Length: 420
Length: 136
Image 1 (cartoon, rainbow over the protein chains, first blue to last red):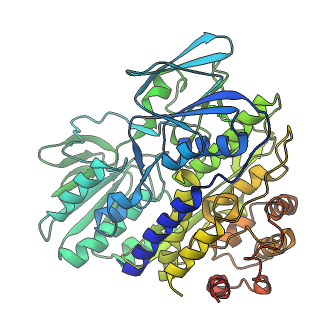
Image 2 (tube, chains in turn yellow, purple):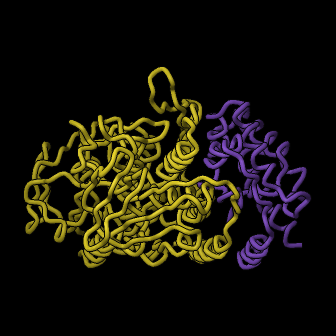
Image 3 (cartoon, one colour):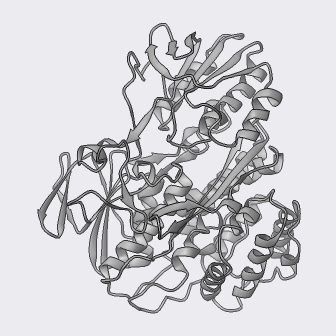
């Protein structure tokens, strides 16, 4: 890893924390209302922050999360290879609390509607939280896979203990071993993420455990994101180390023998990483917000549920079902659209009729090069969908060292705009 | 230049008070659009690291720079791609919003002349130049 970048990144995140200590807006406006946000990841934290920045003191914002801090999935593949450690991508809610966000650590378990205009969020061991608008941002849940025990076969697709487990397994793997990973059918969290992981693990194994191989078992018919970049990475940069199998749907896992049973055969690994098929977070499904599907249908003007009787309940981030990619960067974008719409609702106004969102991200390809992917989405009033604006969509021409440096600047700013 | 000095500058700039926004029922035009830049350019356009801060630039500077990127044939740059996602009117709204956040004649706007050059990796050089100006 490029140590200059890493040191630079640490300073950036420190600077961002200091920068955030002063509230920037002194809002005199007399908006008032109550919002409860469930989930303190990129979507939920951004929403809480911007409600306070834009809404001022009259808007009561409570953020509920089971954990005292969020561990970012963004950059977490670099933890697997010892380039970063988890503490460097862990963010507490102190800056949001300074802005006036009420942070409640606890498990939200259900929604009730005590009156026509009030929602009540149940939190284990806590007084229920009443509000006019509930925003659910719980991220993803995994679909069950026969025989899969994530405590033995990590997904590491929610950062934290899972990341540490996979890292330990990779680092104790024998030289000449087989690292096998499964890629879920789309849509899933972070479209380029699995391919990025294959690249950085391959790069790490080449340097530290000669003769090892990476096998990518992809449920999709082809590489889902940055196809040019990753095709080149698999066939040139990491040729002979990465082996890519498309159309390999995961059927079952032997968690003790470390075998992935797929539609194209059985694969026995030294380290098996199952990134299982995904669906909306548990609370979204149990509250009846997914309808017949796996994700929550919402109106992209305000991210309010389109399910009957659910007015005032909003779903943002990976659980929402607009078809926008599921990533931290665009979760932050959706949160701002949602925050603006909720504040307008408190003022008795309709949402902005033409919201825009965007996605941008960097993916490390080796220990010192990275690629990028970017896209802008615009609201289409005819179809009531967020549509890709085609000229905005593209991937880097090639992985470069400049991109690798830029990746840390991008991440530091995204982290700061979300948590600081 | 050292990251240290840049960080100190960022810390100092955070002490400059921002003019409170006036009370009004409707949010300021362009605010929501402009917030979509903040993932990379920082909340209210105050970036950390080598990414350009939009805070401190005039509305016209931002408008011209983004339009130049939008109409540039070079697509191997994230901002050149991003700029192509917005209408000229939207870019005007975004630029006007960031321009309106200026404290008026603050430092950090002294990077004039950079916005004529956004080819290839030129913008990267611009960023470094800009930081060096600030340092000195």
